[in-house]
Length: 479
Image (cartoon, helix red, strand yellow):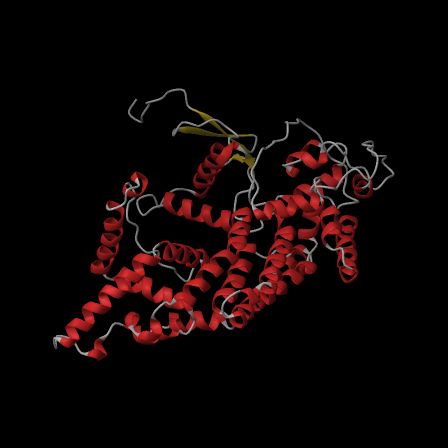
């Protein structure tokens, strides 16, 4: 980053946008595994670590570590996996409820060290299978004790997961259930920001775009508030001190990266350039006297970015306009949080869209919201594209910032798809061919073009590539 900054002449600290998915990963691991989560990962990943040592390392991490050991023990054994299924089938078949009789047995879900969501899914499946897991452990323990009495086994050979200290008790299951609730907000945040920022029809028929830079700052605030609520409610749960410690560790890690937002104006600028909120979201959120300096500093950073990099740009604009997307939706807790803070915005100043050439575009736009239409804007990028004539420089700033991805998830998905395309049997595809194919794929997925034929012609005219569908379907090299 420093080398690129030196070559292009910018401040790398001010331009750096951290991957929100990486931040979430660090925060959740602090919540789940406490202090020095990175050292814990290094310890269990060591090649020289024996199975018993790894089991003990996980067990010391509490209920989630115990569940991890149990899940992996069952998954490694076909016999235990089949017995777990049989216990479920027995219950389903003896039920009077036809819906329950129609259910199919499910297996345990293993977690991994790559994605924290895998731990959440392991916990949820564990809670779903709890009665069957407890039944399985009880039956296997009885069988082992019987073999010991018959002399077929020695007491020292008891499986690690059946030992007293490894068993999941009522208190352990309560902790797992509680952490599942705590992580729900983090799952919502991940879903909100891991998308490709393209408006698409979602479940329920609503049109929604996920993966927007303007949602980052409000998502940080949402998560900070949720953790503070859980911390305050710790006394109502079993083992409140341990729970509060882990919540505090997660809060500290989240706050560490939340303060880093002040290093770059990108998150604040993209949030206020969303016409549905402008500065209103932050003014409604940072209401304490102690938070006033945060608001003033954020405004100064955005104003400086505008004046130093965009205000003096040459005036270039034009072209076609398309109607903005609209949506009807059922909101998650995170979306309700954001909507509550922005519902009373806009409308503090009279509407006046005429921008005098001598006036500052940024100040003029902030002071002239459209009371009726601005709160209904669901696609800020479309909004600014339509106003590039009225605000040629400010729209440039808005489009630059709003198009920044908050996470690397979409880039990583593209890497995976391109990797599948360039298989060992197709290693001679040119980079331009791969690029054009993936571009067409993206356009088709997002409805920008209709589906194209698998056979396309490429022609270079006036230095640009033009792609069109061939009319001669079925033509081959022999014709």
